[in-house]
Length: 425
Image (cartoon, rainbow, N blue to C red):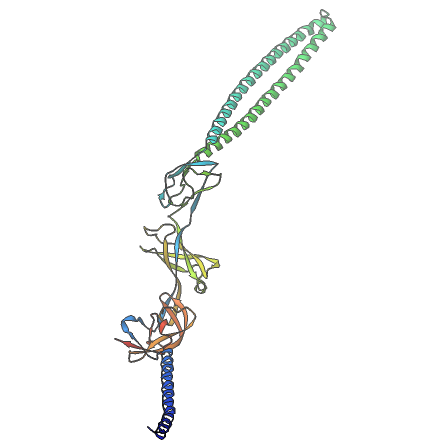
């Protein structure tokens, strides 16, 4: 090959290189644009999602008078409870009944032991017995003293009578001069002295009787104190046997066998199952429509029982208000304290109300979106609706729907990014 041909070939190669380079650039730009478009397509929400009809729950908008009820969950609580406490310092010696057991008033729940209390009872009995013996001795001594003074009084009366007879006998003799005037005066003085002594001894005897009676009263009062002290000790001793005191259920027992307890420490709690209330938790927003006297229906899972609202707790706890329902009907056989129940409080009737079965995730007094079925029953479109109060299993419609329209009320939260749904039979 000559030099001329070589140069010509080199010139052809230089001309072809720019063409190939432009082709590769165009291809790269096209491929990159395609990837960007595909990624954008995947990032955009689908305008139409197909869902099987069997996976959906439908509801129709209704217009009628709707009984307005508010539902809540809670438990039965006994109206009457008895807190059993230790009467004195003691040790739990025996436990006969466990928590949850049905008890009567005479049921022995546990027994306590206190050796010191037994010794105190014995000492109190002995002290009272000694005092009664002393009282009997006092009465005997008083009787003896009283008889001795009566004997003295009898003797004085006899001496006074003798003195009076002597004065009477000497009065005539003194006038005749047989008895000297001095002896007669001495006789009259002696009679006067015996009369005065008689008066003093009679007063003394009356005072003695009064003093004796007062001593007896004092000693009897002291005996009453000793008797009361003994009764207290015996009562404390009897209190070591812990009875239920009321008929019901042993609700709790926070002590164990062998435990030492202080005076007044809680031993057990007994709740009556004869008279109970239902305590329901109602959301704060719904509780505003509830008033004292509203009737209610309580479901104990084995029966329904009627009741009346008798208390609304003014304190809001975790967004809920406690409502107490006074049970007016006969409680079912399974009713017991702490039993979980469901209740419906009857507020009244909403006249000409527009409502729908409560959709999943929709809250009362809110504005949310639901899918409504079109006439063809194969397509559902998203619509914003305003909701009012939750009434049982329904919710009030304020705007956004008309009677007869159908909505999907099952959970559609994963499809809210789409404007339409296609329903497949």
